[in-house]
Amino acid sequence: MALPTDHPPVKIGKVGVLLVNLGTPDATDPVSMRRYLKEFLTDKRVIEWPKALWYPILFGIVLNTRPKRVGKAYEEIWNKDLDESYLRTYTRNQSESLAQSLAMHPNVHVDWAMRYGKPSIAERVDALKAEGCDRILVFPLYPQYSATTTATVNDKVFEALLAMRWQPALRTVPSYHDDPVYIDAIATSIEKHLATLDWEPEVVLASFHGIPQSYFKRGDPYHCQCLKTGRLVRERLGWTKERFRPTFQSRFGPEEWLQPYTDKTVEQLAKDGVKRIAVLNPGFVSDCLETLEEIAGEAHEIFEEHGGEKFTHIPCLNDSADGMRVLESVVRRELQGWI
Ligand SMILES: C=CC1=C(C)c2cc3[nH]c(cc4nc(cc5[nH]c(cc1n2)c(C)c5CCC(=O)O)C(CCC(=O)O)=C4C)c(C)c3C=C
Ligand SMILES: [Fe+2]
Ligand SMILES: [Fe+2]
Image 1 (tube, rainbow, N blue to C red):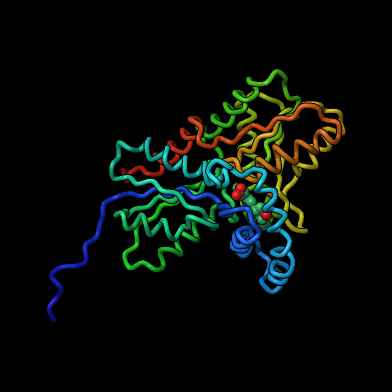
Image 2 (image 1 turned 135 degrees about the vertical axis):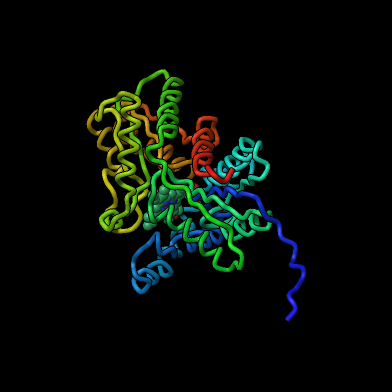
């Protein structure tokens, strides 16, 4: 049998870098919110309960009530200039900025995607492949590893490859919770922010997103990595354990989550007579609903309601020069041998 002498044209030889963050609704209306929350809350990595238990609650209650309520919260923190959430704005900016920093490597192509919502991981992996990327570095944008975040990003990338005859080679970025460049950038962001104030916080809370305690007990390393980040930042600042404390926010559902809870800690500090606090979110690469609404908004209110006087939220690293230095150094390290 004669073999074909030619094959379809293919592009090869490029290296893709895919930044992936959690995701965000397309708009704040209940329909867009429901679509986003449905994709999020049907992820088995996020909610581990058996479907038979969870789906009646999800489809019967959560998806009928939460979209409207959370849509209002998103409205408060929406980037009105671009009509999108800040998480999308910052993730795109990070991708564009990283592409510029790597411009001396013309075979490297930087792109971004969201685990839930758009642009989807499948769409951007296909686009990188079509560009000729036969090697792809996947960067889940979470300094601390959790199955609920990092692993579900990686799962989705591998799922996209299921449909490919000629798969690209893949690398996934490990957690960088103790990377000295990251620790220094967080500590520097605290110092720079506090230098802009005419007051000093008595206590600084490093508030991480929580996960259910049961996930931790089954082996998720997230809690330990958060505590290590906290300890290293505190040591870099030379502060006491009383002044700098890790806490956990964003409880969802009836289970116990990682503690101490941020909201309860803020309330207790105010009740104990602490008048001035600062809160940062070192586990979030970009500001988003959880930092802008839950911390800069709600936690601030809780503190003042219970007698606190001065509250400041220290922004995430976002697309700042310090933040981009962290992302670039992690990417350059993980691309070794490919560029
Ligand atoms: C069981 C539910 C959830 C787990 C576990 C969880 C872990 C987790 N999430 C982040 C980061 C983000 N979460 C965000 C929003 C958000 N998170 C949950 C639920 C769980 N998260 C929900 C339902 C939502 C949507 C808002 C709401 O309905 O309350 C966001 C913000 C997205 C945005 O557009 O701004 C981020 C970021 C981490 C890091 C994490 C575990 C380590
Ligand atoms: Fe979350
Ligand atoms: Fe939240």
